[in-house]
Image (tube, rainbow, N blue to C red; front, side, top):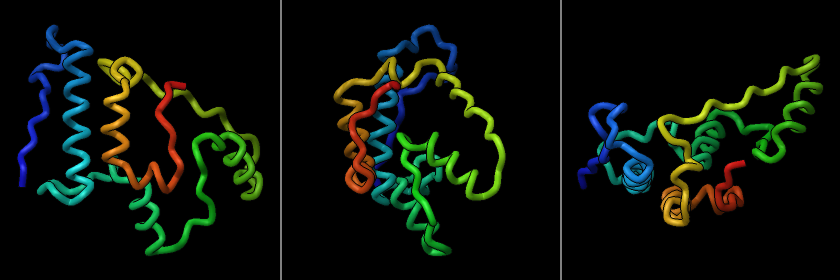
Length: 135
């Protein structure tokens, strides 16, 4: 098995770790991720980065999901499901905190998109994902 080395600093506060270094590290992680998701590494697939397709397959071994909610429909679909379940008013979904030290928007480009599409090709096809956009 191939060994992967992610170019990360020992100290996350390292002044030399800038956006370019972060982009390089993320691109290397996506390269590792592609191999990991294809079973070509000795490291287990972590649930945090597993494909959505495989996650749904895992659920389906126990019970088929009643609903799959797409990100663009989450606000209306969650409200509809809550009403069907008899829940009252739902709290607003709080915004996510920005990733640190840099956000994906800070480092995203066509090459990052290409690498993500390559690692998660099945999800892009199965769920009809388009290119990532910050908002």
